[in-house]
Image (cartoon, rainbow, N blue to C red; front, top):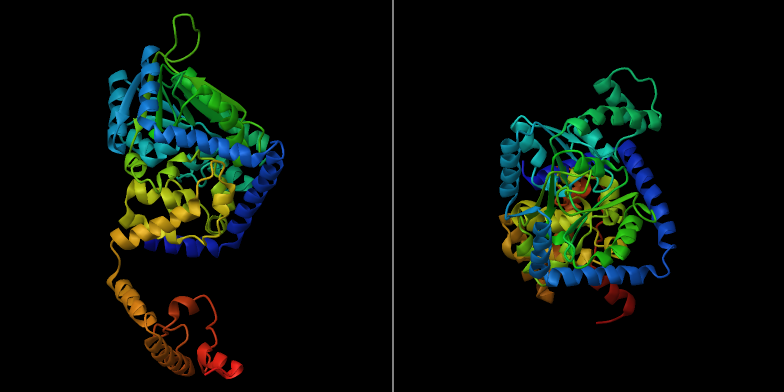
Length: 469
């Protein structure tokens, strides 16, 4: 089964699951209300978006310079920087580091880049225990699932689902009280925090002028993961760079507001190297892996390079009518929703993932809510264009579009083909072929009633009513 076929099957299943849709709608509606209130705290929300757009545009236009400055600052404080061209190179670096240091246990905070390169599964194959420490990530890890949403990995689950999961994994529990569930997860993870030899985090931003890594969480789990183990590894995409620490003054509150409606996320941590001689906390080793994995190819495209501006707030997912109905797992990709549909074909191949750009109404809601003003729905159109020009297309589709072009480029041919089509459709429905494999409009009538087929064309009806020749 191809990725496109798998997507269509999953989307059909999830969109018909009314309980699932109700859970997702409830979660997203809660976020929407909080975000609307959060925007009111800004004197001018649109000006804040434009400022963030300017920051990211400056960073991407001079990516080489800012990344080199960041690397230099990190090394000055005793940290190490590794440039990984592919996901395989990034995985190999971490695996070799873990083997050399005798690492058997790793605590990991939420990282979309780690998901992108399938890091956890590679570590487990080497016999290394990996504990997801974000509560949502911890829950989906116990279920052996991928994250459902960029910001809320377990959005698709109810308290009752989580209580049943914890009861199965940790023993008797007669309540679904959120405080009890959180305490259960905390107790399960506490031992891991104090025994892990390595902590792995992502990065929300890389600050060039100070060589600092900005890590944002609501639970403080990343702070424990980067301060308690002897080794701290940051794995991040190269696009997370920003020019100055002053830029965080607008990026931190905008990220929090767009993602969850908060004034600012609970924990915003800056870390830039191993523990110094006069410090009591922090790792003995500090490693930053700067991952390309197709990003420089996207950077080279002047029409679509702004896709790299994304700050992973998840706002476009919440706004997208497709995501709200089919959910995150239907995409079967690391990045879901509009940003995932735009980004994934660039990272993992246009041929395999060209279908994602068709999973959109092009309503523009994603563009309207993006806090860095990425023109997402136009980039979906760019991907569709790229797929037509460069990707493999089924031969029946190519023939069909050539036939369509031949038809519509002549008024006489258009009238003639329309005359034939109306009669074929009326004849097929008169014979009861609707929704059968012989139905010419089966793709439509599988889920909908057949449209009424007029006896005459619109052109003929217009001529009759207007009296035109």
